Image (cartoon, rainbow, N blue to C red; front, side, top):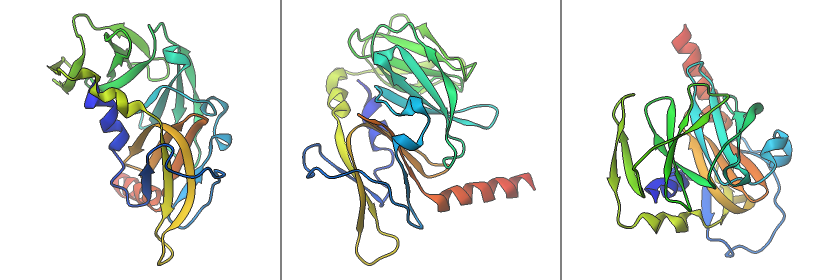
Length: 240
């Protein structure tokens, strides 16, 4: 079912400051936030209310207005929460929409610049999330696709799909995992910042270096202020 979910889960594993540990392998401890010169952890309580509950899946989308939206699927596909994460230091609520969805689904891949292919977990059917109105997306049926594998966009005109015999192989990628965030910046010894329990999905915005963790108790952000500053400097130089 997607290298899909598995690829989204592994995008920022290469970041040296984050260690992923299998669920149950870490002794229980209090989750807390701690800032260093390299890492800032933001907990659900410090985010908009809609980010303080669990979700099924999430993905990032860059709008034509220069903003970055994080979409979080909640209520087993019934609601899509939209957060403006353009500035990770000031995450704001953009809104939410109710979807006429047949159940929980996974975000598979982009279809051009304004659509996202989604795959329903139970029915094995597919749909396209139309993002022409980024703050009010809608679902559209895609007829004839069953258990697709990797997709490749053909500009804005279409896409190709490679079918997989092991379409269910990606199911295990949704099993919750515990994440440890480790700070290696300011000491000779790595320092455990905190542990996020039961993470369902993880994605990273390479532009700002921000990692988003969707856990059972809501959304967590792992910010990297130096990367954010570098982004703003690049934009200022470009505008000049």
